[in-house]
Each structure stands twice: as structure tokens, then as C-alpha cells.
Length: 94
Image 1 (tube, rainbow, N blue to C red):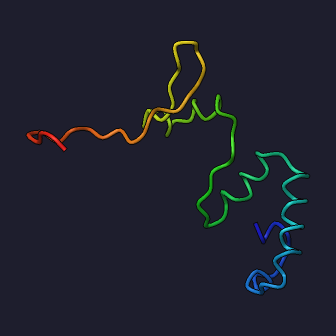
Image 2 (cartoon, rainbow, N blue to C red; image 1 turned 60 degrees about the vertical axis):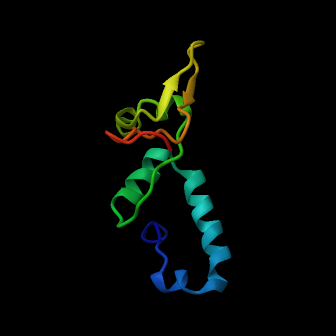
């Protein structure tokens, strides 16, 4: 992300520069699409996930594999209750 701002990495390490960096990053995010931001961060060594609407999150392959979200009887998307533990074989009681 910092490379996208043409900002020297040393500026990130200086606490006094953070307010200016925050303003620059905010302007960058507001001026571009989510796809642009994702493409920019995906090229970096970073762990991230975009913030998406719930109906889009329900279609995410990772969420589908984990069964994170479900449809209510009314058809609304909702999260499953947590925690969901599978009982261990041969173990009874808490």
C-alpha cells in the first residue's frame, strides 16, 4: 500500500508521520474501486480481506467450505452460532 502512495517506507516507522499517512491512505481508498485496492494489496506481502456485503460473503469459497453462514427460514443470510465443536469419538459429557 505504501508503494501505491509513493511514500518511503521509513515514513511508516515514524509515529509523527502516521496522521499524514492515514489521510493519504484514506484519500487513496476513497478515490479508487474495491477491485483496485484488492489488486494493490494482493501484490504485497500482506494478509488482508476486503470488507464485503453479507450476501457477497455468503458466496465466498472459504465461508462456504466452513459453513460460516446460513439461510434462515425466511431466506435471510445469517451467521451460524458459535462455537460449533464436533464431539470427539468415545468422549461423553463436558
